[in-house]
Length: 136
Image 1 (cartoon, rainbow, N blue to C red):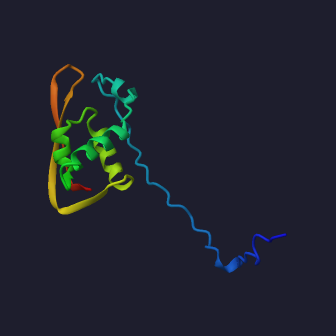
Image 2 (cartoon, rainbow, N blue to C red; image 1 turned 60 degrees about the vertical axis):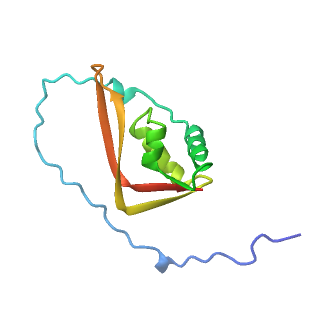
Image 3 (cartoon, one colour; image 1 turned 180 degrees about the vertical axis):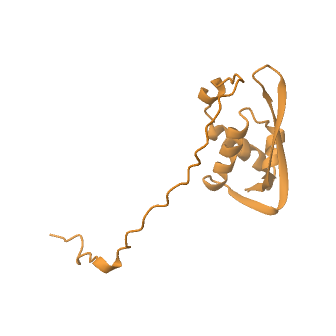
């Protein structure tokens, strides 16, 4: 027969934090006037699924021929199809993937992508962030 733990967990009552009151939010008593502008909210309800495996494959494909690649260079080679959501997925891959990543906060990169607006016009969006480098 074996015993899982050979000692008891001791919790002293004086080691617990004392009760603290929560901070109450200050709510201004302002009456909000309704706006006359009609807003299309369909983009709020549209769901986009980002294939992180595909993004990781794109990074690995570039790292087969180079020692390192920046996020800006990746976005130029493989333009963003889903905009900011895809950019955030690249940043998530920086911490949870098979290759290493470095963030150089001294240099700022501007990443641009194209997006069709609700009226059908093409818009250019951009994000400025510290240089992100994927390393083999």
